[in-house]
Amino acid sequence: MSDEPSAQLRTFLPEFRWEGVENRPYKEEGSAPFRAIARQVLFTEEGLDCELRYFEMAAGGYSTLERHEHMHGVMILRGRGHCLLGDEVRAVKPFDLVTIPAWTWHQFRASEGEPLGFLCMVNRERDRPQLPSEAELAALKSVPEVAAFLAG
Ligand code: MN
Image (cartoon, rainbow, N blue to C red; front, side, top):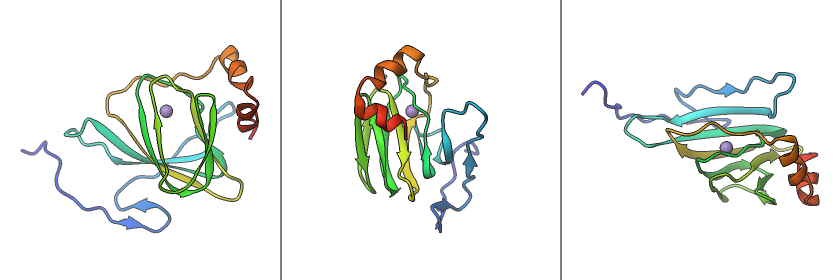
């Protein structure tokens, strides 16, 4: 019985924080493929096969450009920005839903002057993300919209 998750209510706090949830800024080193992004893991219980995380980028920040076998289900919660989905760039706003299938290149970017926050649902057990090779990056940039998106 003691291994079972306990029932709990964790209150929503100002500035998109939740009671009892650690806010983990990503460490930015020289070649970091992301910028100004922090993560809060909202649900990671053993009785669930998925996790729910909240990611937030400061204005002008962006997530890692990556792909992997596992899927993401994303709901935008805060701010404005754009996302790359394969070879498409789409504007996003609060409560939009974004489905990211397996092996689809993806990246989120906050607009200048606005943060971008979203919920991301993901399998608890999942493969490690892949970053694009030089050739894959060049292929992505062959689409002008994508090149402009990646240039920020
Ligand atoms: Mn991902």
